[in-house]
Every structure is written in structure tokens, then in C-alpha cells.
Amino acid sequence: MTAVSAVAVALDGVLCDTSALWLDWLEAAGSIVGFDPKELPADRAQAVAELDRQGAGNWRTLLGRWSEERAPVYLRRDAGTSRALRALEAAGWEIGVFTDAPEPLARTALSHLGLERRITGLETGFSARERLLKRLASGAIVVESRAELLALAP
Image (cartoon, rainbow, N blue to C red):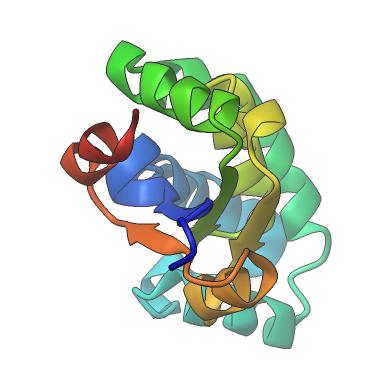
């Protein structure tokens, strides 16, 4: 029997909640970039596809800059979560993160939380979880709540 050595962690639900940051960006950027946030799908992966389909310019760059400036207001570090990830990393676990959030938002969140250097992979958008599991070591554990992460840490 092989020991599990990889974990796929849900960004939203385990590490933070990026939904308010995303929704506020949509409201702020809609008139600048040229889209109506109320007409976008509620599902973020579908909204990203729609923004790309509409040719909404450099929306990814704008989202990245906007979220970097505002992350401290929306996102808070959690000592228990950070401790659990450090313990898994120290034990040699491969740590990946998945989310339906757009990549600039996810990267900003990980950077702000001081977790970017601890992870070996990030997958965003459609089927992010499945794509991450293909990248991680066989038998990776999926963690979708803070409690699951804390229970897993050595």
C-alpha cells in the first residue's frame, strides 16, 4: 500500500473566499471594460468564457491589478490553515490548489495569503479540480473544507 503524498485543496472554502472580491470587481470594471455584470453567468468559469467571447480587452490584467490593491480588505490569513500547509509541505506532500476563479484572482489570493510558494500547482476555471488531480501524485486527497485540511495535517 502506497502512502498518500499529495493533496488538492479548494481555494474557496479552505484557504479563503474570493467571491466578494470577484463580484465587486465585476461591478467596478463593467463600464470600463464594456460589459454588463448582470448579464454574465453566475458561474465564474462560464463568466470568464463569456468575457473572452465578448472580447473584453485586457480584463485579466485589470482584474489582477484591482485584486492586488484590494486583497487586504477582502482576504485574511488564517494561522491554523497556514500551519497545516506548512506541516504538509515539511512532510513532503505535494500541494495543489484548484478554483473556478480566474487565474489572476487566484494568484493574487495565494500571494496575499503567503501560500504561493507552498504550492506545486494551481488550476483555475472549468474542470480545475480534475486537471489538478491529473497533475498531482496518484491517489491525491481532495480537501474542500478547512476542517478537512486541519484533520489531514500531521
